Image: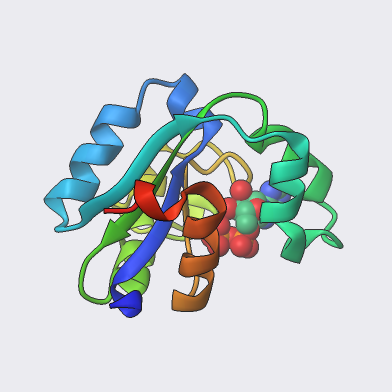
Length: 139
Ligand code: GDP
């Protein structure tokens, strides 16, 4: 079953801009079941840990600053082929390169402030979901 789950965050920009409802609706309409969900805010330490893989990248400081500046919606989603299908649904990292109709194309404003996160592998989906949710918060 692990292969059928992915982890997402509606990032601070999309929350600030009032897009939570529209994004959740598109996720639902695309066949994902919500396994866990909450509105929360990451501390600097949380964001540094969550994005540790990017710590040598020049944009790391900017990324941590952005991801901690306001609340996010964190969620675990379930669907056949969840990781890949969700990456298709959100579109390319840079909204300028994202396909028409994708969540990033519609709601992201820049490569940094790109509205949503989607796990890039089954292994990371599990790690990221467990980072935000205890076992009894996952249904
Ligand atoms: P993703 O898997 O599509 O989210 O992309 P990456 O794993 O490459 O990057 C993680 C996150 O870092 C992205 O979603 C962006 O929020 C941010 N990011 C990536 N590239 C840049 C950049 O060039 N500048 C800034 N400011 N942020 C970036």
